[in-house]
Length: 500
Image (cartoon, rainbow, N blue to C red):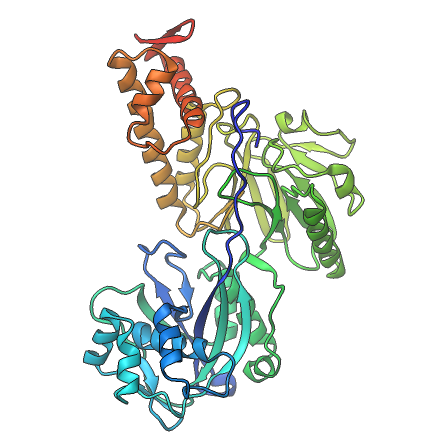
């Protein structure tokens, strides 16, 4: 936690326990004609905006209550609560329900409105036989657990619902919805579109689509895969979360594997130090090498210890040059094959070229990597928590300038050093800029109002955030003060600050 002021300690983050959820993989047609339904998430939703996803959602208390009140519903199945949640979500999100004879029908608008107004209404309608449960069956085709990247995680069961040659179509509900478009895709065409970076898909679903293309529904239903799956944020960008001593709420640092299986690969920020993290990294290296790939380089985005692993232990797993900025090279052992990265340098893996962007605000020598897939952003922004700009070695002006540069590149995805990938980088970076610039203004206003000491300025500038850690508030205030001093708006006499 090198970003923390000296003497400040924070409790470690906690890995969230996965919640159960269920998703519907609806298909129509057969053989080469088979298509699957994807739903486009609106840009305003907090999770995976502008992504295509299967309909579904979390198991709620009303689903558990419905299962308890109706023990005959799917009594022969261990996953009966998940099936109940699945049927409710289908009514809410796509307006489709069982017809009682093994097929499906379009839900009447007034019934759907009732369920969307009150989730508990679904069980009432099913009990009254205005919605049908009998005759419904769905094959479980996989279970996927959200990796430890977010404060909310799911253990998601994916079910195949075969509509056959039915002409039934999904519809949007009245009022608000998390979707704004539906589309039927042939699995192979969907996979091709994702590989071309023309559609966005959540990581658990892309590996499921790969399985569908390779094996088909029947094979998956016979032995539904669960447990370990690779985490693909984009084509050629795999995430390997490594447990590290990082700032909460994060518990892991994202190590990225760039390149394609069988081709040259590069690891970014292999931060493994603990026995657990080294075991995860070692298994990943073995997996990479088993595909015929060579690891041709290791890149570090910056020199903070939660991004640089135990290099001695890692060198026993694989040998490759270290590529980093000159500032980062200062803190790691040198080797004749190492290279220094600087603004504009390019690294090509197959048909993909990654370009180095210098963003030194959070840490001297901090770099990002950009390609058509997106931005590997290190510690510039994250969906959950915040990014500190240490008053000792950070530079608030450079940090803000770096955020603006990354925003203006306007790439489709952002791959942060911690947490989930960012589906709308422009929106997140604008939020960071708005927040930081507002804090910058509050710090300046505090000085202009006659506050001179760091403690008084911080107290005034953070009066809108009473729960902020006082030591962190003072340190971030000092970062803003130094930036304002550098721009000539204020000056310092010993430990006090004054307007120019």
